[in-house]
Amino acid sequence: MKSKANLVFVKNVEEKEQVVSGKKYNLTIAAKDGGGATKNYEAIVVERVWDHYRSLESFKAL
Image 1 (cartoon, rainbow, N blue to C red):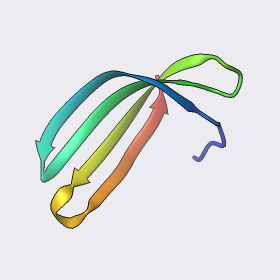
Image 2: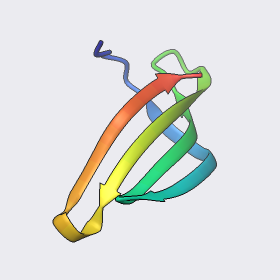
Image 3: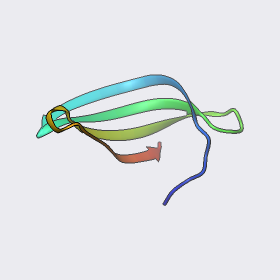
Image 4: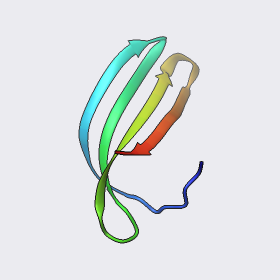
């Protein structure tokens, strides 16, 4: 499901890194929504530097 929410990044709350075939980042970030409320979100990003691959695997509100 795609959302049309306009989020503005506030800060990085927590970051965990796991080495798989590349790197997997579990990020908890704070972002403001269109109404000005700040919420935490979880983003999972996979990166393989050697083949210039970076993908947002999931993004959800906590």
